[in-house]
Length: 309
Image (cartoon, rainbow, N blue to C red; front, side, top):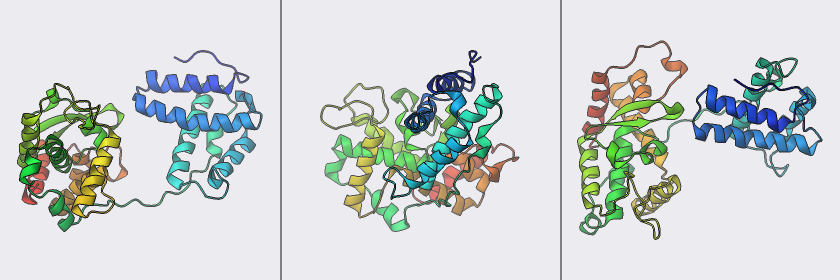
């Protein structure tokens, strides 16, 4: 339950009430709440700059001006990317809808916010020759290099499971189980992912070679961080190195997820299975369908195996 609040309450206090509601009542993850806070702080700063510091000062004119300011971008000459504007306005609209529901405002001011149309984002999988180079058998010197074994294990794991990099890096050694692993995805929803034989072998070889006692499944080998959990930025740097080595431009952890999804879709032609395999939830294209069976998930894993993964 949120605490009583009046329309003359400081705007930042109303935002804090909203964030508490997201965390406690809606059960949003800390990362989600943090993202809402960052986006709403931008609105609070804008409102304060024009003299609006209380909830009753928020009106249609302020919201229209804020949308226009976002569209012009921070330097007033380079438009802000549509996905960034969309995210910030979605956070603001959600906050205003919450204020209306709590009867802090006369009505839902969020209906006056127009969301920018987002360009269609297509997957960017690795081409067959690129995939072959990235997953080629390691040289003898790499086999003796813990960081090289870690790189191969992470790449194999991402392609096998289609996991988001944040899901993979959150895993601990205690979570590792051959063939099936439970990962926590968006919205703190757990799902089971299937591990191919090749990915199992790569991860097992990497774990056998480790000498540290860190709990994380994938660890850093950077000076001063050896044995500590590999960060997302560390994984991105890892991919940049692999991309340079294997002549793959713009290699990013998410491209392995796109590659896994593309292989499953090409091999089986079942969008419902592909969405389930990647851990998508609430997509219009899969709404109303029954839950995909474990047998079909095994088929997705077999499709990856046939492609040498």
